[in-house]
Length: 161
Image (cartoon, rainbow, N blue to C red; front, side, top):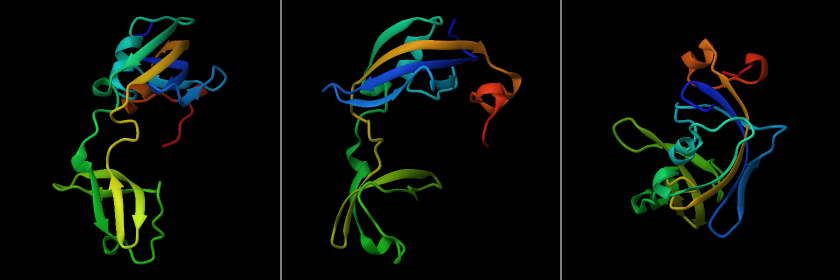
């Protein structure tokens, strides 16, 4: 049964409210995570609590319990000169920048208009209601090492650090 400190493997399909598929994992290559460690969006993690292997469930996750609401202050226009002179700035590329007090944040380049670059620091799925169709493929107790590291390791305990 899914509970804190178990490693859960799921097959899933993720769609937005328009029915467009945003992601998927099948049973042959499931998504595995350490339950209770915050590795998946809170609304999905809460809805999976108590499910067992073979259980299937459709789960709707609000923006608040998913990737958050869109924050308008994280959308901005910056000047090209703020980037390294040799950087090939293209829409879709991501970079990390200090947002004050030593904290770094990931931004995505949305458009390049001459010397103006429009960037967005919101998660690409922020503000969206998420629709998951999941099937629980495996549930097992986490190993001591997984608990120490705070995440699931692959088959046979393999992982890349």
